[in-house]
Picture (tube, helix red, strand yellow):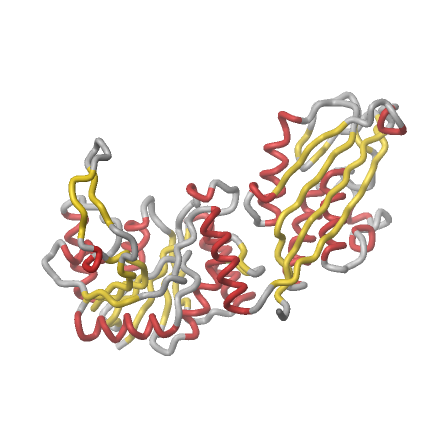
Length: 393
């Protein structure tokens, strides 16, 4: 009989307010999802993993796990549903009589430990249903709709529930069937079992076992990664680029076509903003300059979108063991005004670098009529980026 981990990672990351779903955001240069999967892959108490991701991501994630991450215990990558409960249900449909224990864990809880997995599995074998959690440290009060306190609860009996939650196969499958018969949506898996009258045993968890759903959670996650593996060394890179303005060319800045009577002259699309950012990234990781990677003598880069070049630079950054912390860029030009296009530029860069848009700042300045920019002969851009690499304290 096998123990299967069902890991829902099908969320869109609405609370994170970024272009990249939270399960794919990087911690220490690796997606949160991969950190979580590795812990379950390494656990001798887990035989296989059913991973649930957004429907459009199934093929890409499956390929990544097979070819790059080599997490062989992931036997199925399934499409998620509208709600978390729907995603777990899709995973449970694949659980069969060869499985005796089902462990359900949020993909965005990357600080789960092998010991907690063991306790959950062993607990489910005995009790039938268990949940990991922490007892409340603060005083807990109940208030009504008017925010007036109606009751102060005994915090000794209050648990803040985490995952993993583990169940005997027949218990959790029956609980899900009953929930859907009754059109009931729960906030966790254990509540579906509780409403059938089956007791759920609580097991003490860990304060590090956080769920990353907001920007503040991501900052805490970075701190936990430093605690887990040693301090990070921060590297800074500076980038500069300039191009001449000419007729009969589209003006592309930050991957956005900006309406103007002239465009920038260059071998690629001459996106001066992305070139400066790319140059800064390459400098931060000590890899030379952008021209060494994308020479203007190579026909492969003729009129290429600079977003594609930035995608390749992002891969290089990751391969060198770095993760992007933040970037600040300035475009220097007399005209046109680009303020209304900045948000789209930020989203483009966020997607390429797989970082939240809040870590990206773009601004525009004039040169007060001075120099080649002031004469409207060209546009220049400057960028500063910081990247982190794991090192020794």
